[in-house]
Length: 252
Image 1 (cartoon, rainbow, N blue to C red):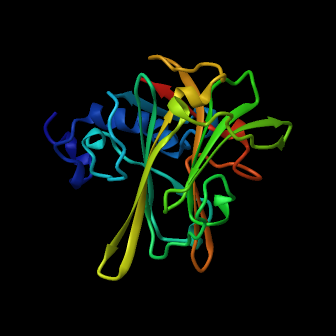
Image 2: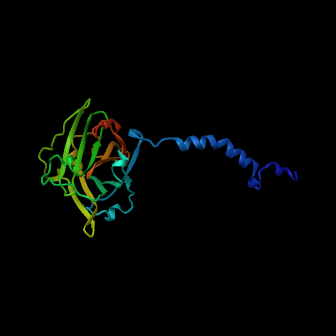
Image 3: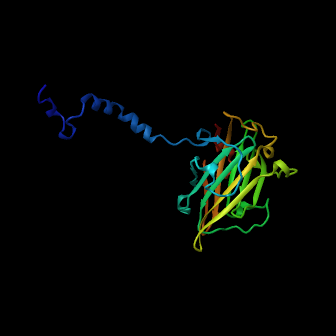
């Protein structure tokens, strides 16, 4: 009817009335969806792509990583730092590749030997819980100066202890490389790239993974500047060994 749109506000003229009714009908659902929280713990999914094996150099611009997006870790306490931490993952027929980028202005790393308490200085960490039926997982740490800690951790009702690999040689050895980035005389960050062979993870179940396999996983970074800052992919409490709060790694 001519003139019927006089009942519609001036700014709405020309809009389809049924379109408007539809918007009003679905609006509560849209608001509810926007308020829904991001999945955490086991419900949080990280998909890992397959690759052919490649050399580990510590370079964040390596060809194998170019099509893989960074997964950004969250600060446990945002007031502790403004630096960014990112992680990329790939897997091959022989093991898992990991790449960390750590924005930083001060490197705190003095340990000159492997298998020491690296977590008391700047470090990146990754945890693989390959089978939920067994409270045993693999932990790997790497410092800015390429010192490593690789341990298997039995965790029985919160009582945990790391065990070093036996006969750590040959195809059990990791491959690793780190780089420290500077601009002039100022440090801007560091990267850590490493390869964890499936041979090192045996006899854990679900190893090696196949397309469709799922593990539980978490990644961390600790930075010791004027204040200690912690990053994680999935929140844990009271410490990093809260394995039941790990996310899910899906092999594509």
